[in-house]
Image (cartoon, rainbow, N blue to C red; front, side, top):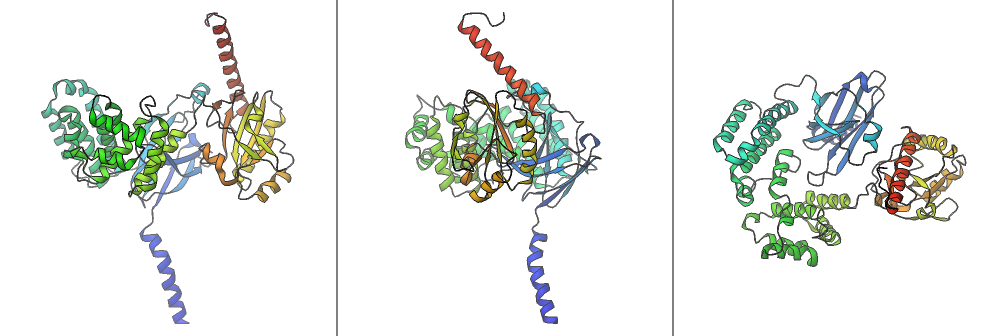
Length: 489
């Protein structure tokens, strides 16, 4: 009996101890009565070039505004949460707990919510009772001094290249924060100050790279490092070109060879880029920038090069980054033409999105087994039953198999709008859907009117009426223009 018990305990410890020793769980909590019954969704960036978002977890605060959440974060990084008008950032370290202080609640107005160019106001979320040596407190204190200095002295430093002023600030910073040994903060501060040196008097990309980056580890999740790198090597490919043999060779590698191997050989001609990891990171940044210049670099050629990197790179972070840049490029935006598709319904009939041309389509991506989807289907029924003029609903369901899909649709005849089965999640993936349920509004011309669209529980009909009005005004203005009538009459 004793041996059996000892064996059981030994097995338990072997299974449990690694979870304790290598736990990556971060605990988040807070209390803010203004945010009672509010859903908080926490994200981090997959990488700091594409800025692809990874959802970490979500929670709903109770009726008193209390919330708790656990995030699985394997390394120190920046986490953010959308709070209506705001986008709040804070830094987390594995196995630590954070008591968040949220800002006064402010939701986006209808106009802001519908505006495709609206960007949330960014701010640093406070950490309750944080000590001076705590990472968030230290970074916020450093940024306060650094950003004030830069705002006041930017023009002066650019014109006069005052080395002594920058060196003096650096000494002040190192003295003030000498008691903070957190490696992430030390690197953050160092690379923010490195940028000041580069901006003020180095002003040579290759010299600054050799001085500050060569032979040092790439800090993929440290904004201080990556912002500095992006400043150094941003638009490098798009600045080079005709008349420069090296630039022309780079362009040829991308446009015609579409080969990361050939591109790597050309970049290796630059003595500064003899570090394999740094050279490939420059390649990825350059290709990302190329996608903003389709007049110089055909998108298909750039994408093919990125696709190759995502498959052959020896560096895991670079494979992920290449894929992220590809997905970002393919991401649909408002006014883009919606991707057409043909999917089967529960009666095994093929239905196409283009069959609904001439009507608005409220496109819902869901899953029959998902409770959140089931809950919102009931709200979709209320919308559909109102028979809103010019509106139809399609649910694209990515169930585990055809039987599950068919059984759910046939056992819920009250949901009489169109349900289609997305086998292998092909359409769901092509639309860039990462969370279920998700919604898109498509206009009668087959263009995307809102992406992501609001859910049924967010007063959908009010938003939809506004979209209809905007489109009608646009059509009237276009008609007047074609008739030669000034649009301000």
